[in-house]
Length: 163
Image 1 (tube, rainbow, N blue to C red):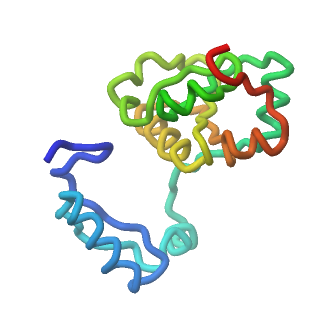
Image 2 (cartoon, rainbow, N blue to C red; image 1 turned 180 degrees about the vertical axis):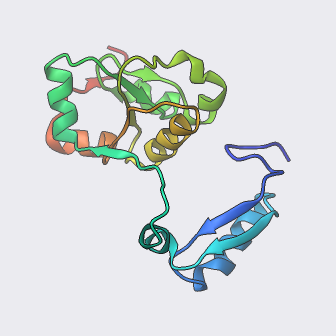
């Protein structure tokens, strides 16, 4: 089986809220070919936070703030990680489209000199994209909360079709 976003031959430590989630997560991972699950962080991220250990975070950007950035011509990269068919239907102005599955091999196409806002259909893939960027040394990364769904709701400047 080929590696996806996470190498098959690396150990995995799961971050779960409770031990009851372990069996389900283990089952899903094994079905995908990931069998090097070495443990889990009991009590999830809360336990890590209260232990005083460091960790990275990804800041979120509300759709109204994204709209403001676009309307004020603020300098940033809007990284759209949706499928081509989604982007063809509707997109935001001046967005850079790199499908999430291609992101690791096309990471060098993303400018590092200004902030990157990750964007998708609902915000779920955007979080994954933001994580990949952080893993590749990008520092100023934001996740567009709700992404296209939120933009539709608040009236972001959306370009329909191939316009």
